Length: 365
Image 1 (cartoon, rainbow, N blue to C red):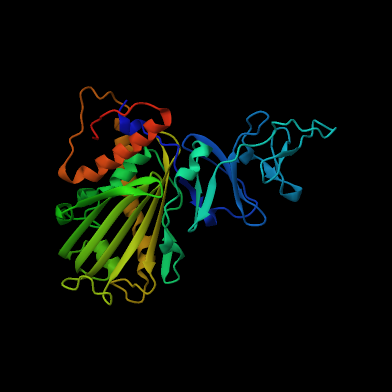
Image 2: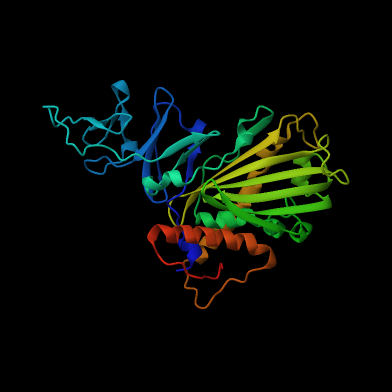
């Protein structure tokens, strides 16, 4: 089977959701990298997470309920668990005796920068890496918004990562909104390394005197610009995009700079599905080109779903092609594809390290 369709890294930090998606005393069940999880926020505001299976008969605890003292009661036989995952009550044991192994397996969890991260792999290895930081979304001089909510995408998460690193697809897929043919001709520089225990790879595109496509001119306030544009896969679970523009000829002028940051989180459910969050941040006071009284971030939220729909359409169609035998088919890599190939290699090496499989050379290398 082709390595793209098959890739699934478990020993990594993934976004289970945004902090606001977890109100107190509300159960949330989900699958991350083929691991069923139940997560909730306790009465004192802490996030906790466990394997979603009751230790008795595999009933998903996310189908249960909270009872007195914040105990989680299984919907099948009524076993009750505290916020440490310890079973503290078994209705069919009126003598009060609890089997020693009656406890839930916790999942490593970190809440930071408005995101809830989980580690679905080997818990003993979670300290070898740290989730990437996104400080823009805690900065008082920035506004941010979520576009589309938690979006289910029927495609391997690597396909989204490759999509995000490859803006040459802006034409033709996004022609007339964020893309045009000239965008595909912007030179690209690739940067990579390791940060906080996780390999990263990204693209840097710098262009001067560029005529912005309609949506970008609207969001950023200028039509003809000097532009710096970066896309970095910071981990298997997050890609960071930054756009900075200035009126043509004023590159680097802080008084004229406008821009945005987009955080894409891509959380695999399994080898064929993932959940995508898109969070946009813009400096406060950045207004639309067509309506100087309207914040640009509001226009982004109104119009960017069209771009998302175009990407999801393409990703779903790509994934379906992996259902057919390769029958001699080999992808042709183009000059701008270097970062995509490196991302593919990084994820495949991470997966091999989990299984102990010897490293192999592939078309991605």
